[in-house]
Image 1 (cartoon, rainbow over the protein chains, first blue to last red):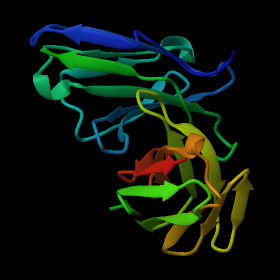
Image 2 (image 1 turned 180 degrees about the vertical axis):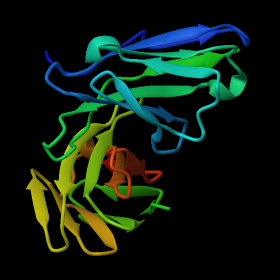
Image 3 (image 1 turned 135 degrees about the vertical axis):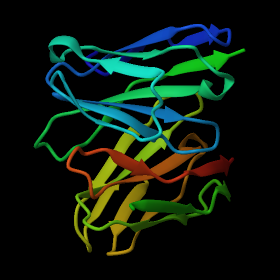
Length: 114
Length: 111
């Protein structure tokens, strides 16, 4: 299967701890997006990479959030000093520039901050 | 600022009872309008992309249409397996392709 994969699928952590999530996009896709989704809402944009370059970050993304995409392949999203308000589903999506921007999503990582 | 509003928030249908979901949008320049299906606890599954007013796309019991202000997802003779949340999103003013989503319509189809 060559779809988008995310790990871990679930993460439970205590307030103040750091967490890191991984996303492996579809191999030929050069665009990668992170979104956050809370219950009853649609996904909300967090950040975007084209190849290895991070080209946009949401104004909603605090300094506690950082993302990387080394070598333009997989991506990681780290949250430092987690807060209860960070509890959400974190979704990764990838697309191929010039193909119409159809974004294909992974299964998500469900974060619960106690 | 790009905005997307979906209605209704929830919809209950009997199996075979056709209906439509609405997505109203405000963008300064539409690059694409997307429909996704999302099952509980899973990531959104891509359904359709529409690019210009008057465009229509179909897949099984689903048909998506687009005007300059809104899009409709028509569901013909739905089955219980069509139960899910349907999300609408726009690729609008940004050059990055980020999607702006509505809050979704949760569809329940009873047998």
